[in-house]
Length: 220
Image 1 (cartoon, one colour):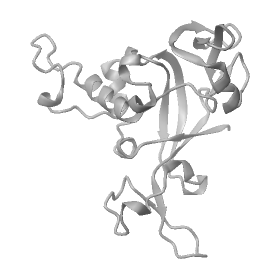
Image 2 (image 1 turned 60 degrees about the horizontal axis):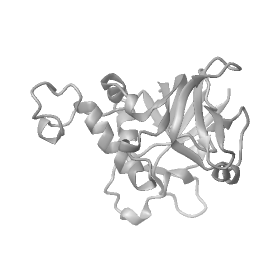
Image 3 (image 1 turned 60 degrees about the vertical axis):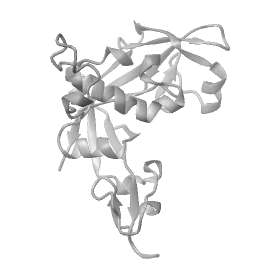
Image 4 (image 1 turned 30 degrees about the vertical axis):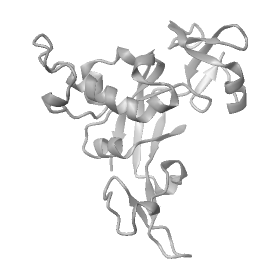
């Protein structure tokens, strides 16, 4: 079975472990996308100059799945951009970690999600991208993969992302009597998304295209 590696932030690892996370949203990129049905290199992806403010969701006649038409600043045309993931394929999640074994011994993996105040100090943590597969403990099976604008997320999907309901005073819309806090989970997800992506130029207000990857955790 084909498997795909995905990075998870510490707070999202904790949501997975607490049985709250069943979907993850990802920006299209060279490692998770097909362009006009083909894989492209990171260099080629950059050359295409995709404009994430000019896109639409369409159905791919070749696969039957929905996908994006995204404007290429280089080619001056819309390119078909679709996810590499398929229902039934495997996922394994990389997380922030540390090898606690002495040199030459078998690795002993320690995970930040379990104990953020590690005795050796914060400088000991290694980025999730460097976690080898044999150190992975989080696995899942892909469900439906949906292409949609980021702001299309529903409250139910925000909950499935692993978001906990914030205190009312932390919700930007809590003073609106018509809101009844029904969008608190979306507000919390918005804040989390911006923490992870705003500095990269893909904040909530940009409403970029995303792959909503539904999954079923594989827990032994």
